[in-house]
Structures are given as structure tokens and as C-alpha cells.
Length: 416
Ligand code: ADP
Ligand code: ASP
Ligand code: MG
Image (cartoon, rainbow, N blue to C red; front, side, top):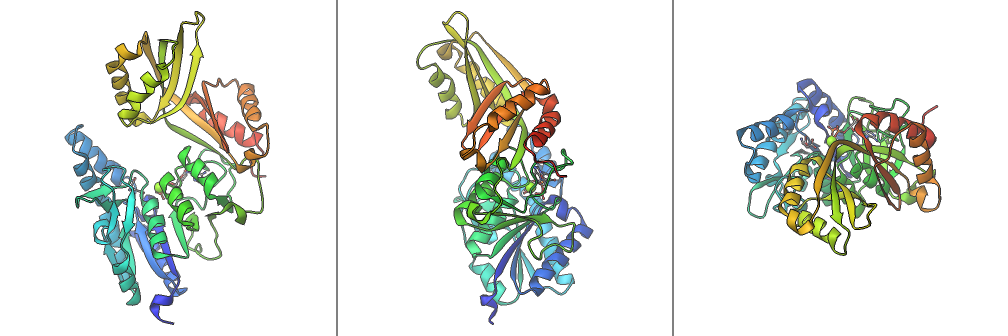
């Protein structure tokens, strides 16, 4: 069999998996195992854990109003270090390897610095090296803009680099190695009774990720779903991993036999609540609030409008991401005359808790169970939003763990 006929595998290692020299040696051993099993392997690495935070902090300290292109030039560098080190570690155990920065591959993105989207990946160079028996180690999280500048894909973006590379290479699978051994019914770090899922559908994983389960970056799940990349989440700390799909497979709904009503519970602390008090209750008022926010590129998530006693004014409550909070307040103040509110009241100490499951499409009562469970714990629901396969509520942040645990139990997700 010629080298080019081998099945291809993408193996991605997150920050804790490459946190130091010993961890990178362990990664090299995991990669070697797959090479010996007969795969052409492309490895995608994150920066060492904590490294990107440090680089981002330096940038902000230098100037809060820095150029986004320089942010990317700086924040992307952690991955260059681990890519080189991983190639060195592989070579040291007799596995020929070479590292690539994003622009060298090239991983072409759009020009949205700080959260760029991958447009195209040129895999010829990597495939050529596969033919020579070389493992490709690619720096995750980064790409190159049409202007030739380095871009980054948003925090947690190495997952997306890996899945997109797997799609471009036609890989058999994309394995995402991390510090947990799969996707759980909820964050195993806060609920001890969380259960590992053998399989989860793209759609449910997309909701879980976007609602706060940061085990996979949301965009990576989108790319996996569009290109039908079978994606496995597994632990790099278990060196027996890598055979017989020991982790969680993210795949098509049809592949999943066992159907649950609710698959998971997620929470996101990345929410801030804004209430515009006493806005005139007239047609067009919602547009006058949300259009300038949209024009400023600020995403509004949950919205609720309360009609006040006098029937002439209303309170409008909504949430934005914490990162957009200050800018949102400024936009609202700048448009105060046009909107006509009395005052703004804010609360950054809120959390969004969500239950997710494709079973909701066909079964009623999921939302009621959620409301009843929270009521029994004395937790007040501030805002509600629903979609076909999820129900989300906004509650005070201090109740996060209590709420997540209670819901996990209420939907029968606790492990025995
Ligand atoms: P990496 O650095 O490998 O990319 P991340 O920290 O981004 O790792 O993601 C792994 C973390 O995701 C876990 O440590 C876990 O705390 C968290 N997590 C949140 N929700 C879930 C979930 N439903 N299943 C598994 N892990 C989850
Ligand atoms: N190092 C980047 C981050 O911390 C990308 C990643 O880890 O996926 O966000
Ligand atoms: Mg991650």
C-alpha cells in the first residue's frame, strides 16, 4: 500500500494536554501509537494552558485600545511554541515530524481579527509530507487573512482548526484530546454524578457548546456538522486511549440508538443582564433599542419585555455577552434620546442554565419540569428562552451549581 492510500487521522491536543515537556512527551507517544496503527496523522496543538491568557493580558496591559491585528500576532504565538516542541518530541522517539504555523499550511481565513472564520485550507504540502512518512504538526487557533496578516479563531479555536483540517484532509476522524475523557451530561467538574455520553448528535453538541459546555468550541461543531466529520472527544491523560473509540463520538443523530428526552445540562457565566426601565410602549421601540446594538456588532441573547402598570411604558430586559457589556451600555446611552428610556439597570451576576435534548421535539413537559425543579429550590427565573431542542433560563449566579445539580437529577441524568 502506498503511503498516500493510508487512512488519515487528525489528533488535537488542548492546553492541559501540552502543558509542559512531560505532557508533550506523552502526546508524542499517543501520536506514535496511531502512526503504528497505520494512519497518516496531522496533529493540531493548542498553546500550553494559561499561555494564551498571559499573552492576552500583556496585550491589554500595553494598551486597552490595541490594534486587533497585533492582538492576533501576539495571542497566536503560544501555539507556535507547542507545535515546534511536539515535532521535536516526535522526532526524539523516532517519528519523523515537522511543524507548520497556520499561514504556512496555509489555513486561510477571513479578516475578522480575534474571531476569524476559516475559508479554505491548502493541504497539498501536508499531503506531500504524508507521502514521505512525516507527521504534520499544525499550530491551532491561527490562520492568515486575505491581507496576509495572522488571524486567530476566537478562544478555544484550536478545536475548529482541527475539525476543519480533518474535513480538508478527508480524515477518517478528528480526535479531540483534552483533560476529560468525553462529553458528559453536564460539566463533570461541577456535577460529580455527570455521566459520560458514548455518542452525541452534532445538533445537540452544537447547542451544548453554544450554551456553555466549552469542551468543544461552538464553531468546531458547526464545521463538523456541515462536513460530516466524525469527531471524538477523549482524554490525553489515559495513554490506553485511542483504540475502540473510548471517548464520546459526535456524530449524526441516526447513528444514535438510545434516545433520551434530555441529553445534557449546560451553563454559561458569560451573560450580563441589562434592563431599560420605562421605555415608551409604542411600535418600533424594540427596533430603536436593538438596531443600534446590532449595528455595533453586539449580540443580544435573551429578551423579555414587561408591560408596566400604566400601559404607557414598558421595561425591556435582555442579555449580552460579558465582553460586550460595557460597549452595549455606551451604545444605549448614545441612543438615549431616540429610545426614550428612564434609566438603565444592570446585573452582571447572572448565569444562563439550559437543558438540551432532541427528545424535546416530540415530547412536551420538559420546560415545566425545569420551572418546577427550580421553584422547589427557591430559585427565581429572570428570563426564559426556548428553541426546538433547548430551554434556557437566566438566574442569579450564586445558584448556578444548585440549579445545574437539581436539573441533572430531575431529568434522570445522574449516574447510579
Ligand atoms: P482544552 O484545553 O483541552 O481545549 P477545555 O478546558 O477547553 O480543554 O475543555 C475541557 C473542559 O470542558 C473540561 O475540563 C470540563 O470542565 C469542561 N466541560 C464543560 N462542560 C462539559 C461537558 N458537558 N462534558 C465534558 N466537559 C465539559
Ligand atoms: N490557546 C487558545 C485559547 O486558549 C486556543 C485553544 O486553546 O483552543 O483560547
Ligand atoms: Mg478548549
